[in-house]
Length: 183
View 1 (cartoon, one colour):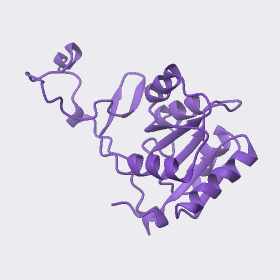
View 2 (cartoon, one colour; view 1 turned 45 degrees about the vertical axis):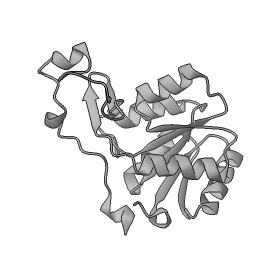
View 3 (cartoon, helix red, strand yellow; view 1 turned 90 degrees about the horizontal axis):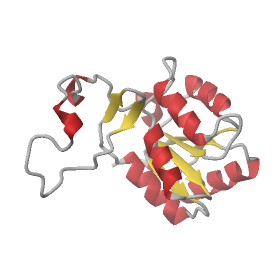
View 4 (cartoon, rainbow, N blue to C red; view 1 turned 120 degrees about the vertical axis):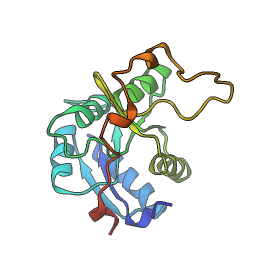
């Protein structure tokens, strides 16, 4: 089990009051080691200098929104943490936004208003998520398949699974782990 008191969390939001609120909620659930960034570029720089276990980012920011930031972090060749777990939070939880967050490589989606209970639940789910990360074309992130289907009857679940050039075992990218952050 992941020790929350040891977690390093980066809060990315262009609203200073929201960053303060998120940090207050994190403290209420026992997470005290928080960093803040006012935009995606500041967050990217922060990640270059500080080991991080989790990113919580708002979806509506400028100049890059949370989805663009997630995509940048996952795909940029110079990314300081392409596999850091990412929770995207928003006050607008329409299905298309959830899908866009997932398709960008986010681990989870947190709808506002946030509470200590929902925050703890989402952080726990995200930090204990053991799905492998997959790189395929313009996507890098947690495998969208959340486990075996009970009624599945064959070796391949999708028609694209028949493409021998795509093999999870040959990807070589393991989920981000930062031993310094867990000390």
